[in-house]
Structure formats: structure tokens, C-alpha cells
Image (cartoon, rainbow, N blue to C red; front, side, top):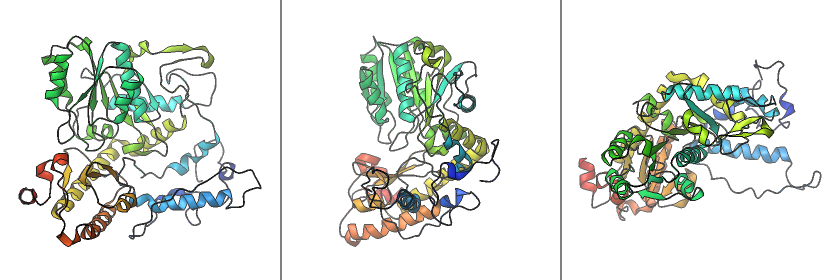
Length: 465
């Protein structure tokens, strides 16, 4: 495995079945070759359900365990360059260095800032990660509390729970384009919920927010601010929301703001400083497996330390306080996050952000010149386009679709070569779908705006724009 920061070199056979990885992909313990495969320009076939079952040792008439896993790894490896519809950064090569950790059970149970009576945890790594994000989001280290979550949904559940505990009678406000976990939180916590209209670009409709705040003036407001909406990448304007609260007569003790920055929380700070605890917000959450990248779903949730006492309870069994949602927590993910943050650094993030933004503009421009309806929000890496007419094409490129829209999320691992392959495939398929122009594409003006629609009705304005 090369030089490792452990007392003795790790023996791969401890946890890795012999011959598990495909031949030629591991050189001197380096698994990085699996991520550097040259994938054929011919689109691969979407993987099918393996229809697996658990069998008793010696009674399996089919392929052995190692063979099944090898085939699975080979399938995933061939599909890497066709994963463009969901926000997951699969561009990392450090898992070989961290593979030795898989021989240990690491559980960060309870409060990250309190040690347990067992040694098998990674809370020291976790606090280092939390401190990094506290600095990024401009809150003093003795003024915040947070933890590494199992993903963005848990971060939203926790942030909204903190708001609910501070303002038990508060009404939860969220845009219709916010993540579905926000409505899930309202249901789980039995909160009154106001669904705010969204503008055509996916941003919150502030006039509708104002109307509903005035309508509910007697009750506190718990507002979910979306920093990069799930489908269109729109950013709710925190300053406008704060001004709206002030205009409606809400004082700072009458509202709580949670910022859902699952994807954009590691993009926006390196372009424009708009996410900061210097403003009267209560919590911020990001997903660690999205822009940063991690093999396991994870996230980071940070709130003000003064707020957490309402949630924190002493648990004698684990010799710790606990204010988390999950209790037992994956001790591997903080190490992966710590390693990634340390290896990349702020300069590395700046380079990733610029490249992704440039590639998103490149894709948008190419699609627009080809006469395809397309939209790209400012400061976004999510390119929204008209929905492909063929489910097989959607599956091949693993696209996410809503109504008559699909989107491509231009993550750090997506190259222009991949985007060019997607464009070529899309243009070829469109000739079949629309019979070389004899059939017109659907109008998507109601989804992405008339100025972005290339249907026959809006085409002239679209070309002029």
C-alpha cells in the first residue's frame, strides 16, 4: 500500500478478498487506476438488477463472492463517465490510502467535542473538519456547535429541529423548490408549514413570503433558505429575506433561519461571500459527498453553541452529551472529509469551482447553439434542459427529470470530453425523436422561462437572445 501513517503497514488481505479488484487496476497497492480508466466513447448499457440472494457457505451454485463483486466493480467503473445527473463528486483517489481504516469499527457516538470511554472513534478528526467549516462560515470556534451527519437530509432535520425547539410555536417557511427533506421535517415534527411560491428560475418568491409572513404575524417564523435549489441551482437571497422579515415587523428573537447549502455551500464561499454567521442565521448544512466528494453519504451541520442546550441531553451509557439526530455516527466519514479538505485546500476548491462554472457555461452555450431549450442560473453548475424523449437515453446518462425538464450537474469529475460525448449523443437521438425537424420539441417556457425556450413559438426570440 506504500507509505502509510500507521504503526505497521496494512495487509490488504485482512479485509480484501483475494482477486477482488479487476486485474491491472491495482499497481503496488494503488487503486487509483480504477478512477483513471479510459472509458469508451460508445455509451455503455445501464446496469441491471443483480437479483442477489444470501446463500449458505458451500451451497452457492452460481458465481463465487469474489466474482460477483468483481463484476459489480467492473460495471460501476464503466458507468463513471455517464453519471452526470446527480450531485456526487466521484473524482477522488485517496480511498486506497484510507482503506486500512476499514479494519476498524469507528463510532462517533454522542457529542463530537466530548470523549467517550472507548478509543474507537474519530472525534479529533471530526472537530478539525468542523473548525474548518466554522472558519469558512465566519463563526468563532467557541461560539459554534456542530457535527458530521449522514447527509444533507439529516442536516436539514437537525437545523429545523433547533429552530423548532427555540421557537416551539414557529411556522416553517420554505420555497416550493427547496429540498424534499424540508417538508419531511415539517411532517416529522408536526410543524405548521407554509410552502412559498418559487420564481421561474427556482428562487423563492419574496412577495409571496412577505404576504404569508404578514398573514401569520402572530407566530414566529422558521425559514429554510435554499443556497442552490435541488433541480435548478437557484439561490434564495438571504439579505432580501432578512429585509422582508424586518419590513414585516419580525425582530431577531421572532425568527430562525436555517441555510440548506447541500451542494453550493462549498461553491459560493469561493465566489461571493453570502453564507456567514455574521448575519442573524441559526444554522448551515452541507453534503460532504457532493462537491467535496466522499465514498459514503455524509454532511456537516453547524449551529450556534448557545442554541444547542435546548437539544442536548446527557446519556450515561455512552458517557457523553448527545444533541445529534442519529446517535451512533459513522467514524470513517470525518476522516475522509479531513483528508480531502487537507489535500485540496482552499486554492484547490477555487480551481474546482472555476472549472465547474466554466464547464457549465460551456455546456449551456453548446446546447443553446444547437437550438435546445436550456437554462443556467448565475453562480450555478446545474444546467437545466428540455427533457429527453427517450427513457433509455435518460437511463444511459443517469439524468434526473422533473416535468418536461432534465438537468446535468457539472461536478469536478465531469470533463469537457464527457460533456462533448453527451452533446453528440443527444443531438443524434434528437434527430430520431423529432424526425429531422418534422416534429417540434415541446414548449418548456413555463418551466425555464420564455427567454430560454427553443420551441417553434419562442425560437425566434431565443435565437436573438
